Amino acid sequence: MSAFTTLDPDGPTISVGGASRATSVSSVVDRENPVWRGLSRADVEELRGIRPSESLGQMFAGDPGRADRFTLRCAGLVVDLSRNLWDERVREALLGLARRAAVDEGFRRLAAGERLNTSEDRPVGHVALRSSRRADVGVDGASVRDEVEATLDSMAAFVHAVAFGDIRGSTGRCFTDVVNIGIGGSDLGPAMAHEALRAFRVTGLRCRFVANLDVADLESNLVDLDPETTLVVVASKTFTTLETMANAEIARAWLSEALGGDGAIGHLVAVTADPRAADRFGVGRVFPFREWVGGRYSVGSSIGLSLMLAVGPAHFRDFLDGMAEVDDHVLAASLEHNAPLLVALLGVWYRDVLGLSSKAVLPYSHDLRRLPAYLQQLDMESNGKSTRIDGSTVDVETGPVVWGEPGTNAQHAFFQLLHQGTSVVPVDLLGFARAGSTSAAMFANLLAQANVLAFGRPADLVPDDPRRPHRVFPGNRPSTLILAERLDPRTLGRIIAFYEHVVFFQGLVWGINSFDQWGVELGKEVARGLLPLLGEPAGRSGPVGVDETAPLDTSSLRAIEWFRAHSADAPVRDVPSGDSGRLS
Ligand code: F6P
Image (cartoon, rainbow, N blue to C red):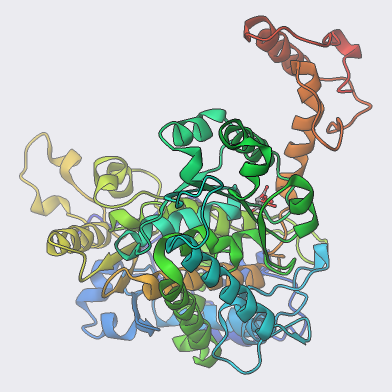
């Protein structure tokens, strides 16, 4: 007897096992819709009608070709989509959506560096960063090939000079350590890749990554470093980000105390799209990148300098080439064989049709342990939107909550919920064939989890005793396998570009701008406005509140009073009280 159940079609869990509804695929695929504004509620309703009636167990049992038909190759990655809650009919319908959203034209525009970031009126050019093998590398109609190559060459020359001791610290000692100060896209990409490419660090330079405003992050990283042999890379697109500038100032003071103000300069390097701001701050060298590189898409730009300082220029080139291979795959593949597109469409299927609100990314690789954090920014900052490009409000669900941990650690933390919880979470399982002496054990675990999630354990296979209900696994829980021979720079580049394009395609289907991030701005402004009330001088732009004219709410006032009463520093300003409290 199977434990597969039919659940509420509109609820947050999956409906399987019921009769298939009558809506025809063609009505979803062929409906005329020349101007695509984004997925609508009506589209979702139509798609709801074609949910598979069979469970994964039934679909596999009745179809020996399923794994082959639902497995794609993408630039050396093997992407097995067969354990997902779909069939050919669903795939066709989703591809119909993709056609209506003109995703191939959308990707062509991305690859050409067009002005896709409409709300900020900016071109989106990150694909050009890794396109050196192509003749037509352009952004916003202009060739950027020479510029991209020149930046990579200057980074490589710097890395060689530092590694070989041609560039040294102000006291003549060679640099041994690099501290990258940056946050968000100026941290997560290089920090994640630095961990992932542990086996490819060839320069002997040790890199650390500091992001948090909490001084504990910087302090704990500087504590065992020698300023004489430490190079600080200040990585910030805008060169205004509070966290990064605060940490950079503390790091500069730390260097200056040991080396003097002039001595510190040669230990400071900036990576930024605003070189003049970096010059004003005072650094020895600036590696620029352009406005058309979005923060969360910037690891292939000079934001990758700290990564290159660790893995060397050749590995960094391989990393970019891996990204370019996936770009090429997407440009060349038919929609049916376009692996990032199909993963994106599955994501839409889960989010909108099956009502699943989160997605877990589970790399079976300790070196990839920062990948979930990296993907959180990539996905949630890109597609966590509820306004379409045209300014209208979406009426469907958009980006999921993305989370994850490396296997096998994750198995001993939250897999209980994945297997037997009331929420269904689609998972991506990333696995490698050659990953050291525990490769087979790691892969066995990955596959075991995928199979238990998919096929479960029905009650009739469990001994008939009082524990039986607790030992039943419902199964029919979706997973995608993303497999590669080994985790090397090229593979990592492929994985990153793969997910970038998943996010991009989903943004196209939802009709949202995946390249802005207005949702992170207001909190920054309000924090600046609150700072004086907590006894600190205001940030650069002066105090700004949600509504400067409105009274501060009583909960905030109480929290401020509490903070001032309990923090070590004496308050420098009185807190306005009661309803007349104002932010500034
Ligand atoms: O606050 C979000 C954000 O703007 C991200 O998009 C970006 O990656 C991060 O801050 C860091 O910005 P910057 O590189 O300008 O310091």
